[in-house]
Each structure stands twice: as structure tokens, then as C-alpha cells.
Length: 148
Image 1 (cartoon, rainbow, N blue to C red):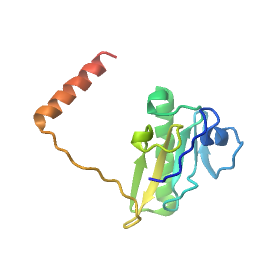
Image 2: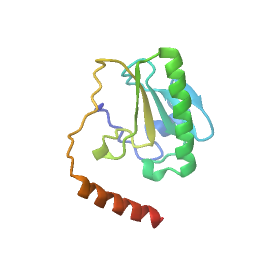
Image 3: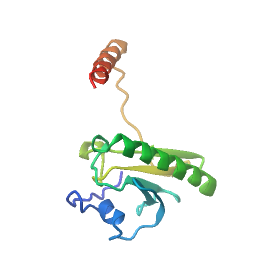
Image 4: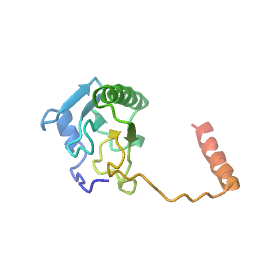
């Protein structure tokens, strides 16, 4: 992950300023709830960020409508990337919080065209806790979902 971290306060973060037109951006698409623009730190040609227009720091802060709108925009942008750059792969990345490697604290998704040996590493240690633990985790989550 990039080591740039935006330390701006909420509402004046880099993406809020882009949304208001205060900072330049190579815009790809926008609608009432979302904006898509080229990542200034391009990993591969066609690397786009899709963000909410309203400031919301993480996935936990967006509305269901914003979440659906972001995914619709991501799908449209991904199709355009495929048609334009013809990458053999594509990665969607959305990070939340410092520990989740989020570097701009305004909800956004990376739409990243991928190529063999492009230097992007997405790996983590497999812990394989066993089926009993997995069932226990599933029961906790299912209970939380029923309580909503």
C-alpha cells in the first residue's frame, strides 16, 4: 500500500476538496452520490478511485444508498477499464481505518487493472482456525444480523 496518508480533518480532506472542485482531478464519471477519478498514484494505466461525494470516513459511515451507488459506479468504471485497457485482471480494494491500511479517510474504492508482475502484493497469513471456530464465528455474525 502507498505510504501517503492524508491527515486533513473531515470535510476538508483531499476527496472532499476534489468533490467541491477545489482541487484538480482527472475525472472519469460522476453522479449525484459518487465521483470517479484517476488515482494520482497510478499503479497501472487506468487505476481509478470511486468515492462518495459526501464525506464519510469508512464503510461504516456510508448509507446503503451510497454503498449501492458506489458499486454501480465501480461496475461501470471496471467495464470501461476492460474495454479501454484490456487488462488480464482487475482488483477492487476498499480499506477502512489505519489498521486496515486506509490512507485517505474518505470512503473510496480502488478499481485497479492488473497485470502479471505489476508489483502489487495482496497477501496475508492463512490461519485456518478449524471448522468448529468457523461455525462459532458464523453463529455470532448470524445473530448480529438477525438483531438488526
